[in-house]
Figure 1 (spheres, rainbow over the protein chains, first blue to last red):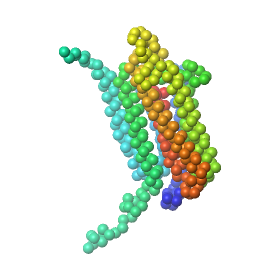
Figure 2 (cartoon, helix red, strand yellow; figure 1 turned 180 degrees about the vertical axis):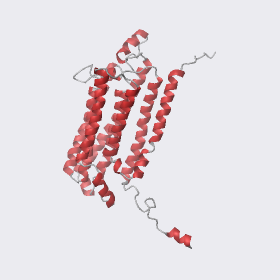
Figure 3 (cartoon, one colour; figure 1 turned 60 degrees about the horizontal axis):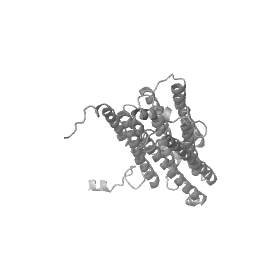
Figure 4 (spheres, each protein chain N blue to C red; figure 1 turned 30 degrees about the vertical axis):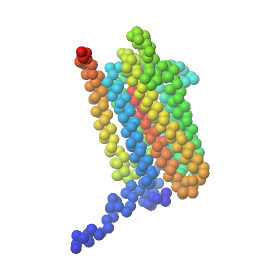
Length: 123
Length: 244
């Protein structure tokens, strides 16, 4: 890593991804996925203790975001980059959050209002 | 005079110029920015899927449409096959990060080993996706097509779509599901395929001692970023298509 200055090099190797850390993160990802399968296959499909609905979907989304965090932070090493770079790459997703809210509200509106009024023939 | 001499003073803060504020190589920054823009593309696809789901009065039941394991069971096994696919992709992400780690230690032998496993994992994943596509196509789903396409009798349409719905049955919902499923998993599969090709190219360069001569295996990190991104997208596709 000739292009890196020494402080960063030490930083990257000190807190970076050693083999042990890699398998730890893998374990976490596998564990979260296993919970998802336990809930979806076991609780919902097989034993039918939990019914599908917004609460369950929110639970899935939270688990998904945790998995996404571990992939980006550790596998993609973003957690160990400079703070300004982390902010640069992540702050733009505010627009995506806004887009999600916008489009789901729009979809919900269309589901009730698109065919609310009849279409009149133009004679 | 005093203010002028102040202008001549050399600033030494992080963003004053003359240094790399992020200490990241140019190509790696550009890979990150490309991935951010690619995340926008995938977000747009998935957000449209969500908007459609909210706009339709009813939707297909994922447990009913994805319940086969090619070669083992034709029905009754929801989530099992996609579980295998998810495991393969997470596993290939781990072997990729192990290749990056081996690159930091300049260990060519280990880099080659982990790159080969990553490529095999990617190929296995694309193979599984091909089987899944074949199965759905066999059922009658395709771009602009669902099992009831071509039927005109309302009773026949609802009978053709009944196996895939738990609530009310909608031709449009089934059609939108098919379009979006093939578009989004297709775009993801395309990314995986590109990733496999990039990995093969990089593997050839490793075998050619290109990075050994260059003194750094940074290129492995750059393709690694792309490969992890593909895994990241799959985490979201899995949740929104198969779980919810």
